[in-house]
Image 1 (cartoon, rainbow, N blue to C red):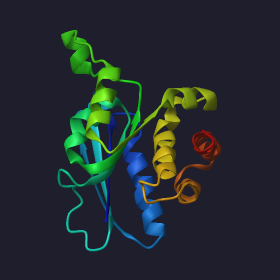
Image 2: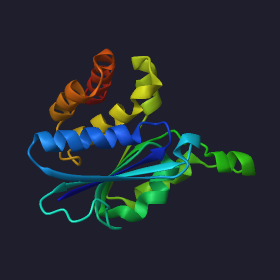
Image 3: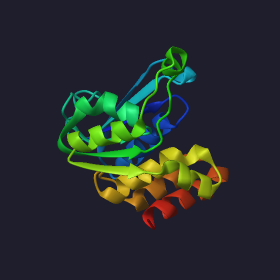
Image 4: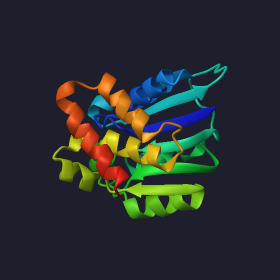
Length: 191
């Protein structure tokens, strides 16, 4: 069984990323269960997607301490969800912290570097991605989800190869966005 948790804030493409993983796994003939927990996502709230791949999956929700990999679209969400990671698990995290609406209203500050250090102390392996740099090089901020999926595929923790991710994009993403998404995968693979 491969347990994957994706976390981010509304608008970052977390749900689409989980659907691409699920589709790629189903294309391999594997059983998949997914679920999302979305809190005020339209307003920058937390979005968490659970993806379970394997045989005899009884629940789509991951138990705490069972995630093989956490794909985090920003460090604070990774810290919030770290209790789902199994011992020795992998965290793929975008390094740019997104200040949630509640922090902005309260005037509090979140230090992304502190959160990344905490993650490194808690996980077996942490891959910190500069997703914004790749998005900027590709010309769109809307491919952060593909950048993180490609990094997870490259790490081997996802259980889906970059080629299988590429195939899922061919079949599930509108033709007008395919080249952009494939460019993001190529950039991650060449790092």
